[in-house]
Image 1: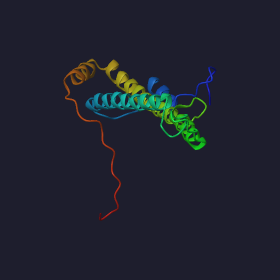
Image 2: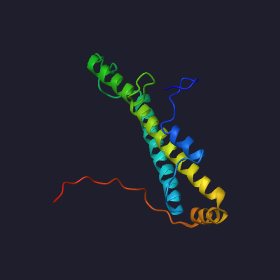
Image 3: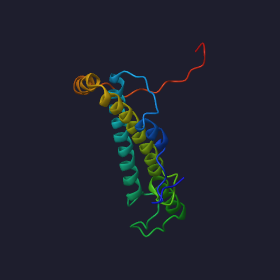
Image 4: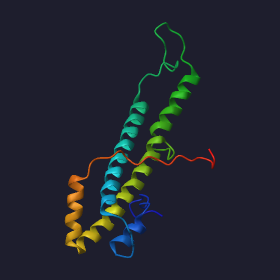
Amino acid sequence: MANDDKTPERPLANLITEAREGRLTVRMDLEKFVYIDRDCEYFKGVIRQIQTTMTRISNQDKWDLGEHFTPQGERDLVSGKTMVKRWREKSQSTQNPNSVYAVMESHYKVIEDFQTLFRTVRERITSVDADQATKYQDLESNLPQQPPATPKVFSWPGM
């Protein structure tokens, strides 16, 4: 479903609304809110780095695949031009919703929504309890940095 401005609706819009209106319950230590927020910032930064790389790939002038005439007067290769065109489109094409850049943008929005969701829940918790608000501010300032969460590796039983 799209909004009036033709942009897709946010992936977690309904959950964020539920949290804002107090109809969503989350049980979690305040410390976890700090780490979730930090992890979201980290992953958003990684996504932007990937998008920057895709922009550089898309804008690369010469690929040395025979897509240009050579100084020796050799002819350009049609297959070279075709490959360069495909890589540019796959890296960052506004017409290709499956370009790496576009897919990363959709991931960015999901992470942004998770961050908004958990911030909203945390704000509701800390807005009604001054002690919790003080505790959260202390945790946010003093919790040591930790590496982002690592994905679980799937393994078969007995392996």
